[in-house]
Length: 244
Length: 225
Image (cartoon, each protein chain N blue to C red):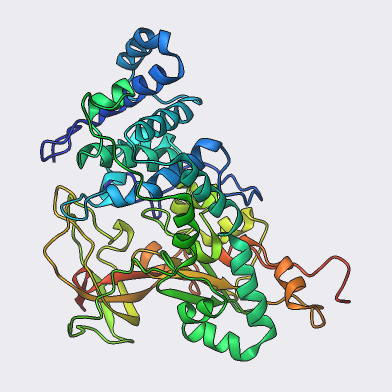
């Protein structure tokens, strides 16, 4: 494979990034175009703290000018990610499974069908496998090649999940990683790490904490953290005890 | 591709910075960028498009390590727009549409967004339409092949040459490894399996005898032992 030029006559990454940076600067500070250009030439890759914001803004402006993008639609997508799609969905699934043994069985047998009962599904959860943690078995999810994650139940992945340190270490040193997350597992617990290399996505069903027998589904869901559904934490018992 | 993206088992990549932030976007541009990808999707050609993950893996190593997930996604998104000629390099550089260009009409309106997010439209690559026989059955030992393609592959380096056991057959899916330029290989649906690898098989005697890694691999990633 040739180095910086993608094969097939595509443009080189260097040209592309310089162009993007100059374009961004041209929109943000029109008078400083020449200066931005010389800056771009001095560096392989023009990335500074403010750059991504400027480059995204420049691209959005261009696509609006071309008539391809309605900014209100962009607002609506951002809003959907921030309000409707996130780990609160997964927490409801977990709470339902804790309260309803028949649902738990359906969830473990066919995750995709069971989350659809609660209205969740779609891209990145078409083949959802639910992994049940027990006192002697701890499941933990990663994507070593990219950042695959079950969006409909957990939302977009947290920064640590997409980071190289987590992705590199969790398959070789899961116990050390869990310790850093504050979870010390004894040597007799089996740790199963699930590397999401194909189209299967995973949701961990954490252990139900003790003292929660009388809690409503809603209050149970409030205890369930995102990390417990990736497998980097357990669910803690409520601080006040189990009284509902 | 034996690239910087394939990090499973590497050491010294830094501390895991863990915080409890559950908001999906830390900065405004991250959300705008992610959403632009969604609303532009109807403009992207379906055919002869480079594999998205291939483009992501082609980010130069030093940049790959320095850039955040959303920076890389944006980088790849823009490159894709240019490669499929949705925008031109000149337009990007000037920030202005090419002269004489006919204005498009946005294909996704705010009203459509709610619908798009509430329906359960599948983007699955499962191929229930074809009959392909399975080469392996649950419980069977297999070896991950020692392959080193320069295109995109879903067989991570740390599994190559290692022996595992088929845990589950997930049925038939499109093969997602690509040719050397990042384009899909010929239509080649095949079974995908979850394979269990013992930690000691992967990492040697220092690993826990109880621990294991499960990965999903395509038929062509595996061979009989």
